[in-house]
Image (cartoon, rainbow, N blue to C red; front, side, top):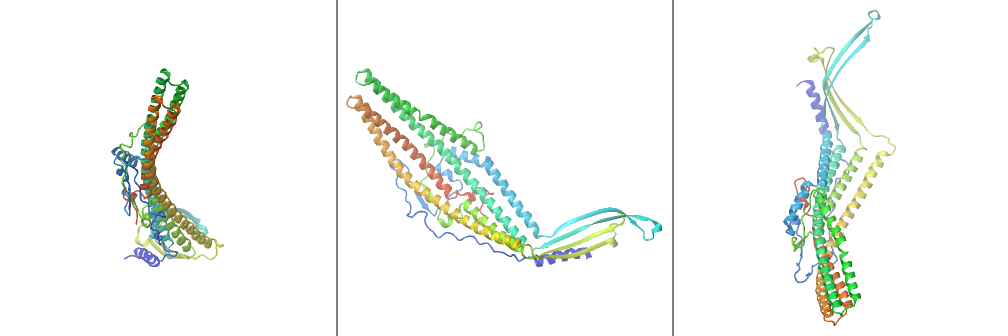
Amino acid sequence: MNRQRIGLILAATIGLLLAGCAVGPDFKPPAAPTTHDYTPEPVVLPSAGVGDVQQNLKLGATVTAEWWKLFQSPPLDRTLTLAIADSPTLDAARATLAQAQEAVRAAAGGLYPQVDLGASASRSRAALIDADHGSRVENLFSVGPLVSYNADVFGGTLRLVEQQSALADFQNYQLGAAYLSLSGNAVTQAINIAAAREQLAATDAIIKADQQNLELVRLSVQAGKGAPADLLSAESQLASDQALVPPLQQQLSAARDALSVLVGKAASEWQPPEFDFTSLTLPTDLPVTVPSQLVHARPDILAAEAQLHAASATIGIATANLYPSISLTASWAQQATTTAALFDASNGLWSVAANLTAPIFHGGTLRAQERAAEDAFSAQLATYRQTVLTSFQQVADVLQALDHDAQLVRAQQYALDTATASLRLAQDSYAAGAGSFLQVLVAQRIYGQARLGYANAKGQRYLDTAQLFVAMGGGWQTAEPTVSSNR
Protein backbone atom coordinates (compact mmCIF):
# COMPACT_ATOMS: atom_id res chain seq x y z
CA MET A 1 0.00 0.00 0.00
CA ASN A 2 1.52 3.35 -0.98
CA ARG A 3 1.92 6.33 1.32
CA GLN A 4 -0.93 8.24 -0.34
CA ARG A 5 -3.49 5.62 0.65
CA ILE A 6 -2.01 5.27 4.13
CA GLY A 7 -2.40 8.99 4.74
CA LEU A 8 -6.00 9.11 3.54
CA ILE A 9 -7.06 6.09 5.58
CA LEU A 10 -5.29 7.41 8.68
CA ALA A 11 -7.05 10.75 8.50
CA ALA A 12 -10.49 9.20 8.02
CA THR A 13 -9.98 6.62 10.77
CA ILE A 14 -8.86 9.14 13.38
CA GLY A 15 -11.85 11.36 12.55
CA LEU A 16 -14.34 8.52 12.84
CA LEU A 17 -12.88 7.46 16.19
CA LEU A 18 -13.14 10.98 17.57
CA ALA A 19 -16.75 11.49 16.48
CA GLY A 20 -19.78 10.14 18.28
CA CYS A 21 -20.46 12.34 21.34
CA ALA A 22 -23.22 14.96 21.10
CA VAL A 23 -23.50 17.60 23.83
CA GLY A 24 -26.77 19.33 24.64
CA PRO A 25 -30.17 17.89 25.56
CA ASP A 26 -31.61 14.82 23.85
CA PHE A 27 -35.11 15.69 22.70
CA LYS A 28 -38.08 13.95 24.27
CA PRO A 29 -41.56 14.64 22.83
CA PRO A 30 -43.97 16.24 25.30
CA ALA A 31 -46.10 13.77 27.19
CA ALA A 32 -49.59 13.10 25.88
CA PRO A 33 -52.32 15.05 27.69
CA THR A 34 -53.99 13.27 30.58
CA THR A 35 -57.42 14.81 30.00
CA HIS A 36 -60.07 12.41 28.73
CA ASP A 37 -62.78 14.82 27.55
CA TYR A 38 -63.01 18.01 25.53
CA THR A 39 -66.06 19.41 27.35
CA PRO A 40 -67.07 19.52 31.04
CA GLU A 41 -69.88 17.09 30.32
CA PRO A 42 -69.89 14.44 27.56
CA VAL A 43 -71.78 15.62 24.48
CA VAL A 44 -74.64 13.43 23.28
CA LEU A 45 -76.23 14.80 20.15
CA PRO A 46 -80.02 15.15 20.42
CA SER A 47 -82.57 14.41 17.74
CA ALA A 48 -83.02 17.16 15.18
CA GLY A 49 -86.70 16.34 14.78
CA VAL A 50 -88.89 14.20 12.58
CA GLY A 51 -87.46 13.82 9.08
CA ASP A 52 -83.94 15.03 10.00
CA VAL A 53 -80.80 12.93 10.40
CA GLN A 54 -79.84 11.68 13.84
CA GLN A 55 -76.09 12.11 14.29
CA ASN A 56 -73.99 10.11 16.76
CA LEU A 57 -70.49 10.70 18.11
CA LYS A 58 -68.10 7.73 17.93
CA LEU A 59 -65.47 8.26 20.63
CA GLY A 60 -62.09 6.78 19.78
CA ALA A 61 -62.81 6.45 16.06
CA THR A 62 -60.38 7.86 13.50
CA VAL A 63 -61.02 10.07 10.50
CA THR A 64 -60.37 8.66 7.03
CA ALA A 65 -58.24 10.60 4.56
CA GLU A 66 -61.11 11.17 2.12
CA TRP A 67 -63.59 12.10 4.84
CA TRP A 68 -65.69 14.18 2.47
CA LYS A 69 -66.92 10.96 0.85
CA LEU A 70 -69.14 10.52 3.92
CA PHE A 71 -71.36 13.23 2.40
CA GLN A 72 -72.06 10.72 -0.40
CA SER A 73 -71.85 13.27 -3.19
CA PRO A 74 -70.08 12.23 -6.42
CA PRO A 75 -69.84 15.90 -7.57
CA LEU A 76 -68.12 16.75 -4.28
CA ASP A 77 -65.71 13.82 -4.71
CA ARG A 78 -64.79 14.98 -8.21
CA THR A 79 -64.30 18.54 -6.99
CA LEU A 80 -61.90 17.46 -4.22
CA THR A 81 -59.97 15.30 -6.67
CA LEU A 82 -59.43 18.35 -8.88
CA ALA A 83 -58.49 20.55 -5.94
CA ILE A 84 -55.86 18.15 -4.60
CA ALA A 85 -54.37 17.57 -8.06
CA ASP A 86 -54.13 21.21 -9.18
CA SER A 87 -53.82 23.29 -6.00
CA PRO A 88 -50.95 25.83 -6.17
CA THR A 89 -50.92 25.84 -2.36
CA LEU A 90 -50.13 22.12 -2.23
CA ASP A 91 -47.54 22.48 -4.99
CA ALA A 92 -45.79 25.20 -3.00
CA ALA A 93 -45.90 23.11 0.18
CA ARG A 94 -44.47 20.07 -1.62
CA ALA A 95 -41.61 22.13 -3.08
CA THR A 96 -40.86 23.65 0.33
CA LEU A 97 -40.75 20.17 1.86
CA ALA A 98 -38.35 18.97 -0.86
CA GLN A 99 -36.14 22.00 -0.15
CA ALA A 100 -36.06 21.15 3.58
CA GLN A 101 -35.18 17.52 2.82
CA GLU A 102 -32.25 18.66 0.67
CA ALA A 103 -31.08 20.84 3.57
CA VAL A 104 -30.94 17.69 5.72
CA ARG A 105 -28.77 15.95 3.13
CA ALA A 106 -26.52 19.01 2.89
CA ALA A 107 -26.05 19.10 6.68
CA ALA A 108 -25.40 15.34 6.81
CA GLY A 109 -22.57 15.79 4.32
CA GLY A 110 -20.57 17.44 7.10
CA LEU A 111 -20.34 14.10 8.91
CA TYR A 112 -18.09 12.64 6.19
CA PRO A 113 -14.61 13.47 4.92
CA GLN A 114 -14.49 16.03 2.14
CA VAL A 115 -12.38 15.04 -0.87
CA ASP A 116 -11.23 17.63 -3.41
CA LEU A 117 -8.87 17.58 -6.34
CA GLY A 118 -6.44 20.45 -6.74
CA ALA A 119 -4.29 21.39 -9.68
CA SER A 120 -2.07 24.38 -10.32
CA ALA A 121 0.44 25.71 -12.80
CA SER A 122 2.82 28.60 -12.17
CA ARG A 123 5.72 30.33 -13.90
CA SER A 124 8.26 32.38 -11.94
CA ARG A 125 11.56 34.14 -12.38
CA ALA A 126 14.19 33.69 -9.67
CA ALA A 127 17.65 35.23 -9.26
CA LEU A 128 20.59 32.86 -9.34
CA ILE A 129 23.03 32.67 -6.42
CA ASP A 130 25.81 33.65 -8.71
CA ALA A 131 24.74 37.16 -9.73
CA ASP A 132 26.94 36.99 -12.79
CA HIS A 133 24.66 34.40 -14.27
CA GLY A 134 21.54 36.61 -13.99
CA SER A 135 18.18 34.95 -13.31
CA ARG A 136 16.24 31.80 -14.19
CA VAL A 137 12.65 31.22 -15.30
CA GLU A 138 10.97 28.13 -13.82
CA ASN A 139 7.66 26.33 -14.33
CA LEU A 140 5.93 24.38 -11.55
CA PHE A 141 3.02 22.00 -12.07
CA SER A 142 1.05 20.34 -9.26
CA VAL A 143 -1.92 17.99 -9.11
CA GLY A 144 -3.37 15.78 -6.39
CA PRO A 145 -6.22 15.04 -3.98
CA LEU A 146 -6.91 16.77 -0.65
CA VAL A 147 -8.95 15.14 2.12
CA SER A 148 -10.29 17.22 4.98
CA TYR A 149 -12.42 16.20 7.91
CA ASN A 150 -13.90 18.17 10.77
CA ALA A 151 -14.07 15.68 13.63
CA ASP A 152 -17.48 16.08 15.23
CA VAL A 153 -16.05 15.42 18.69
CA PHE A 154 -18.85 17.14 20.61
CA GLY A 155 -21.67 16.51 18.15
CA GLY A 156 -22.21 20.01 16.76
CA THR A 157 -22.69 18.62 13.25
CA LEU A 158 -24.91 15.82 14.53
CA ARG A 159 -27.09 18.40 16.25
CA LEU A 160 -27.18 20.44 13.03
CA VAL A 161 -28.42 17.39 11.13
CA GLU A 162 -30.96 16.79 13.90
CA GLN A 163 -32.11 20.40 13.66
CA GLN A 164 -32.51 20.27 9.90
CA SER A 165 -34.34 16.94 10.15
CA ALA A 166 -36.77 18.47 12.64
CA LEU A 167 -37.32 21.43 10.31
CA ALA A 168 -38.00 18.99 7.46
CA ASP A 169 -40.56 17.28 9.72
CA PHE A 170 -42.08 20.69 10.31
CA GLN A 171 -42.45 21.27 6.56
CA ASN A 172 -43.94 17.80 6.19
CA TYR A 173 -46.58 18.67 8.77
CA GLN A 174 -47.10 22.03 7.07
CA LEU A 175 -47.87 20.10 3.89
CA GLY A 176 -50.36 18.03 5.89
CA ALA A 177 -51.90 21.21 7.26
CA ALA A 178 -52.17 22.63 3.73
CA TYR A 179 -53.89 19.44 2.56
CA LEU A 180 -56.29 19.58 5.50
CA SER A 181 -56.98 23.27 5.00
CA LEU A 182 -57.57 22.79 1.27
CA SER A 183 -59.99 19.89 1.71
CA GLY A 184 -61.79 21.62 4.58
CA ASN A 185 -62.16 24.90 2.70
CA ALA A 186 -63.31 23.16 -0.48
CA VAL A 187 -66.03 21.24 1.37
CA THR A 188 -67.00 24.42 3.23
CA GLN A 189 -67.45 26.34 -0.02
CA ALA A 190 -69.47 23.49 -1.52
CA ILE A 191 -71.75 23.63 1.53
CA ASN A 192 -71.89 27.42 1.26
CA ILE A 193 -73.13 27.00 -2.31
CA ALA A 194 -75.79 24.56 -1.13
CA ALA A 195 -76.73 26.85 1.77
CA ALA A 196 -77.03 29.91 -0.47
CA ARG A 197 -79.23 27.98 -2.90
CA GLU A 198 -81.34 26.74 0.02
CA GLN A 199 -81.81 30.30 1.24
CA LEU A 200 -82.66 31.45 -2.28
CA ALA A 201 -85.25 28.69 -2.47
CA ALA A 202 -86.63 29.81 0.90
CA THR A 203 -86.73 33.40 -0.30
CA ASP A 204 -88.50 32.29 -3.47
CA ALA A 205 -91.15 30.57 -1.31
CA ILE A 206 -91.53 33.75 0.73
CA ILE A 207 -91.94 35.85 -2.42
CA LYS A 208 -94.54 33.45 -3.75
CA ALA A 209 -96.45 33.83 -0.48
CA ASP A 210 -96.18 37.62 -0.87
CA GLN A 211 -97.55 37.38 -4.38
CA GLN A 212 -100.45 35.27 -3.12
CA ASN A 213 -101.13 37.92 -0.48
CA LEU A 214 -100.97 40.66 -3.09
CA GLU A 215 -103.45 38.82 -5.32
CA LEU A 216 -105.66 38.16 -2.30
CA VAL A 217 -105.74 41.86 -1.41
CA ARG A 218 -106.29 42.88 -5.03
CA LEU A 219 -109.36 40.65 -5.25
CA SER A 220 -110.58 41.96 -1.91
CA VAL A 221 -110.22 45.59 -3.03
CA GLN A 222 -111.94 44.87 -6.33
CA ALA A 223 -114.81 43.29 -4.40
CA GLY A 224 -115.06 46.42 -2.24
CA LYS A 225 -114.07 44.55 0.92
CA GLY A 226 -110.41 45.59 1.27
CA ALA A 227 -108.85 49.01 1.73
CA PRO A 228 -106.46 50.47 -0.88
CA ALA A 229 -103.91 50.86 1.93
CA ASP A 230 -103.82 47.09 2.28
CA LEU A 231 -102.80 46.87 -1.37
CA LEU A 232 -99.87 49.24 -0.76
CA SER A 233 -98.84 47.23 2.31
CA ALA A 234 -98.88 44.01 0.29
CA GLU A 235 -96.80 45.58 -2.48
CA SER A 236 -94.36 46.98 0.08
CA GLN A 237 -93.91 43.55 1.70
CA LEU A 238 -93.31 41.96 -1.69
CA ALA A 239 -90.69 44.56 -2.62
CA SER A 240 -88.99 44.18 0.76
CA ASP A 241 -88.68 40.41 0.39
CA GLN A 242 -87.51 40.67 -3.22
CA ALA A 243 -84.65 42.83 -1.94
CA LEU A 244 -83.37 39.78 -0.07
CA VAL A 245 -82.46 38.05 -3.35
CA PRO A 246 -79.42 40.07 -4.62
CA PRO A 247 -77.32 39.64 -1.42
CA LEU A 248 -78.01 35.91 -1.46
CA GLN A 249 -77.06 35.73 -5.13
CA GLN A 250 -73.83 37.54 -4.26
CA GLN A 251 -73.10 34.98 -1.52
CA LEU A 252 -73.67 32.23 -4.05
CA SER A 253 -71.34 33.86 -6.59
CA ALA A 254 -68.63 34.43 -3.98
CA ALA A 255 -68.79 30.78 -2.86
CA ARG A 256 -68.56 29.58 -6.45
CA ASP A 257 -65.57 31.83 -7.18
CA ALA A 258 -63.82 30.78 -3.96
CA LEU A 259 -64.26 27.11 -4.82
CA SER A 260 -62.86 27.72 -8.32
CA VAL A 261 -59.70 29.20 -6.80
CA LEU A 262 -59.36 26.24 -4.42
CA VAL A 263 -59.55 23.92 -7.44
CA GLY A 264 -56.74 25.93 -9.02
CA LYS A 265 -58.84 27.49 -11.76
CA ALA A 266 -59.97 30.98 -12.62
CA ALA A 267 -63.67 31.63 -12.14
CA SER A 268 -64.01 32.17 -15.90
CA GLU A 269 -62.45 28.77 -16.66
CA TRP A 270 -64.33 26.46 -14.32
CA GLN A 271 -67.74 26.49 -12.69
CA PRO A 272 -68.46 24.28 -9.67
CA PRO A 273 -71.39 21.85 -9.60
CA GLU A 274 -74.76 23.13 -8.40
CA PHE A 275 -74.52 21.71 -4.92
CA ASP A 276 -77.71 21.47 -2.85
CA PHE A 277 -78.80 19.63 0.26
CA THR A 278 -80.59 16.98 -1.76
CA SER A 279 -77.23 15.88 -3.22
CA LEU A 280 -75.32 16.09 0.08
CA THR A 281 -76.04 13.48 2.72
CA LEU A 282 -75.41 14.54 6.29
CA PRO A 283 -73.05 11.96 7.89
CA THR A 284 -74.60 10.08 10.78
CA ASP A 285 -71.55 8.60 12.55
CA LEU A 286 -69.02 11.26 13.55
CA PRO A 287 -65.55 10.09 14.69
CA VAL A 288 -64.12 11.79 17.78
CA THR A 289 -60.43 11.12 18.43
CA VAL A 290 -59.55 10.99 22.13
CA PRO A 291 -57.38 13.89 23.41
CA SER A 292 -54.29 11.74 23.98
CA GLN A 293 -54.34 10.75 20.29
CA LEU A 294 -55.41 14.09 18.88
CA VAL A 295 -51.90 15.47 19.49
CA HIS A 296 -50.64 12.84 17.02
CA ALA A 297 -53.45 13.40 14.51
CA ARG A 298 -53.46 17.17 13.97
CA PRO A 299 -50.70 18.53 11.73
CA ASP A 300 -50.59 21.89 13.52
CA ILE A 301 -49.75 20.18 16.83
CA LEU A 302 -47.14 17.96 15.17
CA ALA A 303 -45.65 21.01 13.43
CA ALA A 304 -45.32 22.77 16.80
CA GLU A 305 -43.64 19.64 18.21
CA ALA A 306 -41.20 19.57 15.27
CA GLN A 307 -40.29 23.20 15.92
CA LEU A 308 -39.74 22.32 19.57
CA HIS A 309 -37.41 19.52 18.46
CA ALA A 310 -35.48 21.94 16.24
CA ALA A 311 -35.16 24.38 19.15
CA SER A 312 -33.77 21.56 21.33
CA ALA A 313 -31.16 20.69 18.69
CA THR A 314 -30.18 24.37 18.45
CA ILE A 315 -29.19 24.24 22.12
CA GLY A 316 -26.83 21.37 21.27
CA ILE A 317 -25.30 23.37 18.42
CA ALA A 318 -24.71 26.36 20.68
CA THR A 319 -23.26 24.11 23.41
CA ALA A 320 -20.87 22.41 20.98
CA ASN A 321 -19.49 25.81 20.03
CA LEU A 322 -18.15 26.12 23.60
CA TYR A 323 -15.83 23.15 23.09
CA PRO A 324 -12.69 22.68 20.98
CA SER A 325 -12.97 21.75 17.32
CA ILE A 326 -10.58 19.41 15.58
CA SER A 327 -9.91 19.30 11.87
CA LEU A 328 -7.84 16.70 10.02
CA THR A 329 -6.31 17.04 6.59
CA ALA A 330 -4.37 14.72 4.34
CA SER A 331 -3.01 15.51 0.91
CA TRP A 332 -1.00 13.96 -1.87
CA ALA A 333 0.42 16.04 -4.65
CA GLN A 334 2.51 15.35 -7.71
CA GLN A 335 4.84 18.28 -8.41
CA ALA A 336 7.23 18.76 -11.31
CA THR A 337 8.72 21.48 -13.43
CA THR A 338 7.53 19.82 -16.63
CA THR A 339 4.26 18.15 -17.53
CA ALA A 340 6.16 15.11 -18.76
CA ALA A 341 7.61 14.47 -15.30
CA LEU A 342 4.43 15.41 -13.42
CA PHE A 343 3.27 11.84 -12.82
CA ASP A 344 6.70 10.38 -12.06
CA ALA A 345 6.49 8.42 -8.77
CA SER A 346 9.56 10.20 -7.42
CA ASN A 347 7.78 13.56 -7.61
CA GLY A 348 5.02 12.66 -5.11
CA LEU A 349 4.58 14.71 -1.94
CA TRP A 350 2.22 13.89 0.93
CA SER A 351 1.23 15.48 4.19
CA VAL A 352 -1.04 14.74 7.17
CA ALA A 353 -2.08 17.45 9.62
CA ALA A 354 -4.36 17.91 12.61
CA ASN A 355 -5.59 21.28 13.88
CA LEU A 356 -7.29 22.05 17.18
CA THR A 357 -9.12 25.29 17.90
CA ALA A 358 -10.38 25.93 21.41
CA PRO A 359 -12.46 28.99 22.33
CA ILE A 360 -10.79 31.01 25.10
CA PHE A 361 -12.40 34.44 25.14
CA HIS A 362 -15.29 35.67 22.96
CA GLY A 363 -16.67 38.40 25.18
CA GLY A 364 -19.49 36.20 26.47
CA THR A 365 -20.91 35.66 22.99
CA LEU A 366 -20.90 31.86 23.03
CA ARG A 367 -22.52 31.57 26.46
CA ALA A 368 -25.12 34.16 25.48
CA GLN A 369 -25.92 32.17 22.34
CA GLU A 370 -26.40 29.03 24.45
CA ARG A 371 -28.72 30.85 26.86
CA ALA A 372 -30.62 32.39 23.95
CA ALA A 373 -31.15 28.90 22.49
CA GLU A 374 -32.46 27.69 25.85
CA ASP A 375 -34.85 30.66 26.02
CA ALA A 376 -36.03 29.94 22.46
CA PHE A 377 -36.77 26.36 23.51
CA SER A 378 -38.81 27.58 26.48
CA ALA A 379 -40.75 29.93 24.21
CA GLN A 380 -41.43 27.15 21.71
CA LEU A 381 -42.57 24.83 24.49
CA ALA A 382 -45.12 27.45 25.55
CA THR A 383 -46.20 27.78 21.91
CA TYR A 384 -46.66 24.02 21.70
CA ARG A 385 -48.80 23.98 24.85
CA GLN A 386 -50.90 26.85 23.47
CA THR A 387 -51.37 25.00 20.17
CA VAL A 388 -52.64 21.93 22.04
CA LEU A 389 -55.02 24.02 24.15
CA THR A 390 -56.34 25.85 21.08
CA SER A 391 -56.94 22.57 19.25
CA PHE A 392 -58.87 21.19 22.22
CA GLN A 393 -60.91 24.38 22.30
CA GLN A 394 -61.75 24.03 18.61
CA VAL A 395 -62.93 20.46 19.14
CA ALA A 396 -65.00 21.46 22.18
CA ASP A 397 -66.56 24.36 20.25
CA VAL A 398 -67.57 22.23 17.28
CA LEU A 399 -68.94 19.43 19.47
CA GLN A 400 -71.10 21.91 21.34
CA ALA A 401 -72.05 23.57 18.05
CA LEU A 402 -73.32 20.24 16.71
CA ASP A 403 -75.38 19.81 19.88
CA HIS A 404 -76.88 23.28 19.45
CA ASP A 405 -77.34 22.79 15.70
CA ALA A 406 -79.56 19.76 16.27
CA GLN A 407 -81.60 21.69 18.83
CA LEU A 408 -81.85 24.69 16.51
CA VAL A 409 -82.93 22.62 13.49
CA ARG A 410 -85.66 21.02 15.55
CA ALA A 411 -86.82 24.40 16.92
CA GLN A 412 -86.74 26.05 13.48
CA GLN A 413 -88.66 23.15 11.96
CA TYR A 414 -91.38 23.57 14.58
CA ALA A 415 -91.38 27.35 14.07
CA LEU A 416 -91.72 26.88 10.31
CA ASP A 417 -94.58 24.40 10.68
CA THR A 418 -96.52 26.69 13.02
CA ALA A 419 -95.75 29.81 10.96
CA THR A 420 -96.96 28.08 7.79
CA ALA A 421 -100.20 27.05 9.45
CA SER A 422 -100.64 30.53 10.96
CA LEU A 423 -100.14 32.24 7.60
CA ARG A 424 -102.61 29.93 5.90
CA LEU A 425 -105.18 30.62 8.63
CA ALA A 426 -104.64 34.39 8.41
CA GLN A 427 -105.02 34.33 4.61
CA ASP A 428 -108.22 32.26 4.84
CA SER A 429 -109.67 34.56 7.51
CA TYR A 430 -108.89 37.67 5.45
CA ALA A 431 -110.40 36.12 2.32
CA ALA A 432 -113.57 35.37 4.31
CA GLY A 433 -113.69 38.92 5.63
CA ALA A 434 -113.18 37.79 9.22
CA GLY A 435 -109.65 39.12 9.68
CA SER A 436 -107.53 42.19 8.91
CA PHE A 437 -104.69 42.35 6.47
CA LEU A 438 -102.43 43.46 9.31
CA GLN A 439 -102.81 39.96 10.72
CA VAL A 440 -101.79 38.55 7.35
CA LEU A 441 -98.69 40.78 7.25
CA VAL A 442 -97.65 39.76 10.74
CA ALA A 443 -98.12 36.10 9.88
CA GLN A 444 -96.21 36.60 6.64
CA ARG A 445 -93.19 38.18 8.42
CA ILE A 446 -93.11 35.36 10.96
CA TYR A 447 -93.32 32.82 8.15
CA GLY A 448 -90.47 34.52 6.28
CA GLN A 449 -88.24 34.56 9.35
CA ALA A 450 -89.01 30.91 10.08
CA ARG A 451 -88.39 29.84 6.47
CA LEU A 452 -84.99 31.55 6.32
CA GLY A 453 -84.16 30.49 9.87
CA TYR A 454 -84.68 26.83 9.03
CA ALA A 455 -82.54 27.15 5.89
CA ASN A 456 -79.73 28.80 7.87
CA ALA A 457 -79.90 26.20 10.65
CA LYS A 458 -79.75 23.38 8.13
CA GLY A 459 -76.72 24.84 6.40
CA GLN A 460 -74.92 25.49 9.68
CA ARG A 461 -75.34 21.87 10.71
CA TYR A 462 -73.60 20.73 7.54
CA LEU A 463 -70.81 23.27 8.05
CA ASP A 464 -70.17 22.26 11.65
CA THR A 465 -70.12 18.60 10.63
CA ALA A 466 -67.35 19.35 8.12
CA GLN A 467 -65.52 21.40 10.74
CA LEU A 468 -65.51 18.42 13.10
CA PHE A 469 -63.67 16.31 10.52
CA VAL A 470 -61.12 19.10 10.09
CA ALA A 471 -60.74 19.58 13.87
CA MET A 472 -60.03 15.85 14.19
CA GLY A 473 -57.09 16.12 11.76
CA GLY A 474 -58.85 15.04 8.59
CA GLY A 475 -56.87 11.79 8.20
CA TRP A 476 -54.08 13.70 6.44
CA GLN A 477 -51.40 11.11 7.37
CA THR A 478 -52.66 8.64 4.77
CA ALA A 479 -53.67 11.22 2.19
CA GLU A 480 -50.68 10.87 -0.17
CA PRO A 481 -47.14 9.43 -0.11
CA THR A 482 -45.53 12.84 0.46
CA VAL A 483 -47.83 13.63 3.37
CA SER A 484 -47.09 11.15 6.14
CA SER A 485 -46.29 11.23 9.81
CA ASN A 486 -42.77 10.20 10.81
CA ARG A 487 -44.01 8.62 14.03
